Length: 164
Image (cartoon, rainbow, N blue to C red):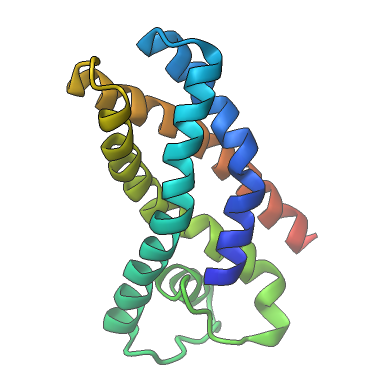
């Protein structure tokens, strides 16, 4: 899932930067062009560092919780566990990958969100030295909540369309 996740985050890069820039521009009193530039730099770091790191965290979590074994798809509970706990490295249930890949990508949004907030705050505190650190954190948190709501909606639409 690392390769598909990086591609999906690359596709989502522009809309995410625009959503976050609109919120940042208003909250931190930056020109819109400066907000776009700074948010783009922060999101580039998130995409290049945060997404692979989130994938690695989920891979380790999946290996620890499942031992690397297939959980099976015999019931809805096992399906949920398989796609959630093994989101980073899906067991190749060939006939189910059409719905498992969008589900796993959506599950991977959880660690990506956490790392986005951490990484983007780190980057933007250094770019906005004159801005209170607490305000930077709250702005980054709020901007990421809205951009990840967008990503969650898009991911959910992908899941729904894949099972039709």
